[in-house]
Image (cartoon, rainbow, N blue to C red; front, side, top):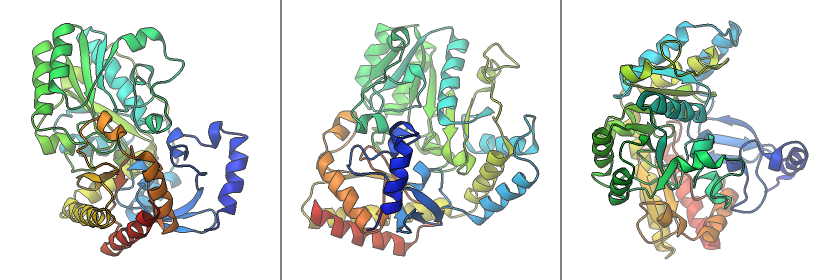
Length: 427
């Protein structure tokens, strides 16, 4: 495969951008080699700077649930851009997207739009501290909630795959107020609340973990979190930046029947443009300026392009049968991958929910970060490059999800299974 143009671009980028990338997850540090530079995308496919074509399971790390350059989204953004790209003033698009979010997500009565998932989680935690008058936060090992200082403690995803368990530059006092516990361990969080009774402002969790690979909550686990936080007076925050509108219109909270106090959204809610959102109970959200004392602002928050893309995306997702088809394709891919791994006699655990899945190179169940870390990462690296050679593009880390879009077809799934069969020969 010729990648000369990508290599030349990467050399130029390294002189100008830290590591040659604008997000560490885009580097190929954990799999070896240099990243491909993408020039265009359509439907389920992407093309790199050398014209190589790939079936895409990164989907811009999740937002492209309708596939790339969906006609409805492109038309909505084009029309909006023709009217002006940003006003710094309220627009009808903000109201319409807010209506769609509130109508869909059980926990959200009032929502505030921001520009990224990091802004959403950072703001939600500030709001939790303002509402409760407390300072401590509980998060979970392997959970990544953006790069706000208080949350970069044993973060997962891109940090885990690059071997950095935390970040330099974090004030020690912020880290001291962040309690990190193992995911899916009810006993650990019960003990934490007993040890810090009346001190915890919020528990923040991915109800379906997506940054240590896809890890589902054990039965009863989210219910235990809900009960513990209510009993203590702490808030429960669901980070549904990945799972929101991905596993259903009502997100993971709809699947599991657990209603948090606050929910953070991103990715799909902006249809592929930069966006984030946080929302929840009205009495909590009334603490946000200009109604209350918790200040948060942003010049491009609720910008018309992102609102237009978000509205077009969510309206399409509300059409009958969309999630049923995503579930069908996800099941086909999981079944096919399981078969080819078994045929190759290579241990695998595939965790999946709907159109999200991760293939862990381990024969043991994966229920937390320790389990995810125990997989054969070198074997994954060989598998990654083998898939690439067969026209299949996945995230360059086994701590990430595969994302399926409505643009993927049965033919794409079969080509992926065939590609995996060839790729496993190199493993």
